[in-house]
Length: 182
Image 1: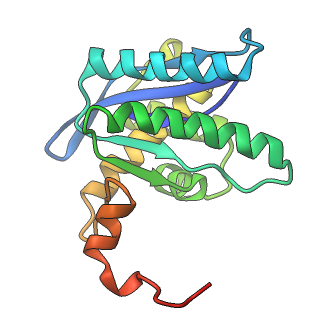
Image 2: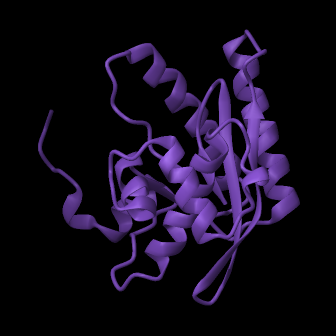
């Protein structure tokens, strides 16, 4: 399962991996734009991601990392939505891998600055999705792109390192622990 976090529209896509082939199971958006209270938005993100997980039973979750923009408030809201989606997966012991937007676009189109339309068109071609199944909100194909990027990375000879939290990271990387006083 892949997620493109958002507080207006959160995109998602689920693929089935069968050896070296992937196929579309579903894609769509969680429409949050009518919810004015930011905390109720986060509750809806959690409920919706939980519902998707229960419906599709994904083995792994790929999520787009927030990009660093100039608007700090927007980044904070996006980071909260991402954290809530991650929490929904962690509570069901689903491994999470985070990908930078540039890496996802590179994996799908070969161009890190590709537009949403270019990403959607490449996914449509690679996964043989009929044009009429591509939603109007391309956040859905961005979520699908995260899932497909993860599928492609999983087949690569140098896999992404996955951790279930800081404790696991520090346990597996004791040399990263700083003994410096602050």
